[in-house]
Amino acid sequence: MNDLIRLSNLTVTYERHPAVHHISGGFAAGSLTAIAGPNGAGKSTLLKAIVGELRPAEGSVDRGPLTRNDFGYLPQAADMNRLFPISVADTVMLGAWKNAGAFGRFSRKDAERARDALGIVGLSGFESRHIGSLSAGQFQRVLFARLLLQDARVILLDEPFTAIDQRTTRDLLDLVLRWNREGRTVIAVLHDFEQVQSYFPETLLIARELVGWGRTEDVMSPTNLIKARAMAESWDEEAEACLPEEEHDSGELAKREPAE
Ligand code: ADP
Ligand code: MG
Image (cartoon, rainbow, N blue to C red; front, side, top):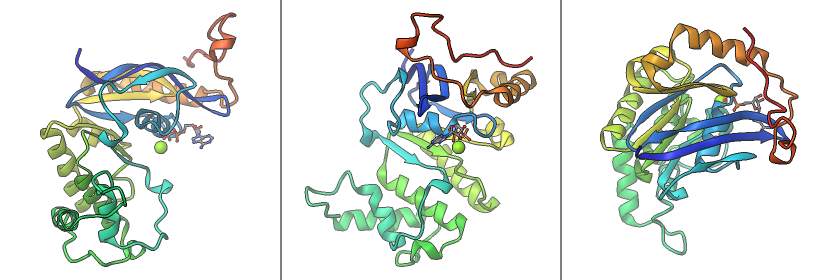
């Protein structure tokens, strides 16, 4: 298999409580995958582990030849601070930081590319606006412009269309599909099942543990969706991770059976 990113028995914990548990599988190069699952299922945690923001407590993420610069990551809106006093143009140009010279200077070319990117997301003329003055949809367009500038091989999006107007969602979804046509690997956490089924050929369905990973039509079956909800509802927040030093015993100390 030509997987670009491989997860092997990946467990990620917060203070030893597992948020993502024993996930294994791969993202093929150039694939377009939705990550779906109930609230609190570990979707954002999984994305952060893939991009390297969180380290595995157990298992691994194999990124092959990829480095941090190959990843474009858009966190969930709630994780972002818009009070920071920065203009639209500067926010977009941050996407070019990997091209900036040793002293962090942006070139005239970067400024031109930022302007072009803003044009593509429909925000020409917004360059000098403060990001705090934008609507949620406009701000998301800015962040997509930044991703355009970043030109990453792998793009990770965490609920990019939540609380975003329909018109913006359609425009930005077009951009996602374009990125994928260009051969980029795109992974997006989505809560809208219709979007998943209409646009994402692959789905990873998670409820702390893996429920299914493969073709969307197979994974998003009614049986799997019911199973995911039951697993999420019965998850023990206080369970300890089954870390290697505890494994001499049963090896699966924190693993529980999903509710029937
Ligand atoms: P999702 O994105 O699917 O809603 P998350 O990955 O955000 O789920 O969260 C999974 C679990 O981990 C939840 O129980 C959540 O409360 C917990 N969690 C998430 N972030 C943190 C954190 N920074 N510290 C402690 N617990 C966290
Ligand atoms: Mg989340």
